[in-house]
Image (cartoon, rainbow, N blue to C red):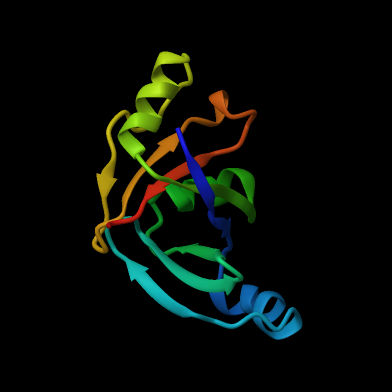
Length: 135
């Protein structure tokens, strides 16, 4: 299993515009773009930081997983995303080690990124996303 880097840290927020007052205006981070992801029921603002990103995630659908998370836990850290070389090998190793997975097989997003989530119970209370970028 080879973790290449932290791809992004995701922070759930009620409103992107309000959150950007801190992240963009006060910290002077660049807004790299905003993307609506209907399948996930969220809008994401991308803030590049070196070789990684901060993602501000705001729910657009009241029944989305992020909306439920926000209602239960409030705004704050949602997950950390680790970029890996081989997501299937990584998932197999984690499964063999008895680490609970949310996704036992990777999904593929519209950009060809393969991703899967590790359950927080297996990662000391942190939701961890794994990314394998297309070659």
